[in-house]
Length: 72
Image (tube, rainbow, N blue to C red):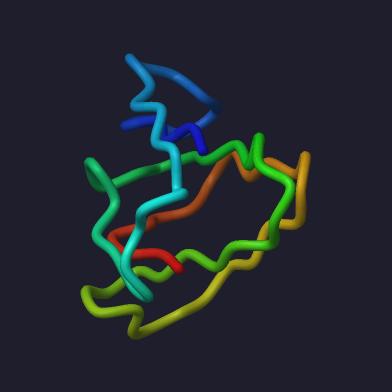
């Protein structure tokens, strides 16, 4: 998973391997855009502890404009 600190995939990305992720984890930064390079579906939330608005990305999908604070 690739988390960007700015919209439109700008800024220095943080790459995270979700293999050892808890059921709901915090993003490495407040992500403003995300690329799902995994083979799994993941959901991203604009509040801590996987609360608030949800955006789901399937394998290979990306979103250039969201706010993600936690994910699962």
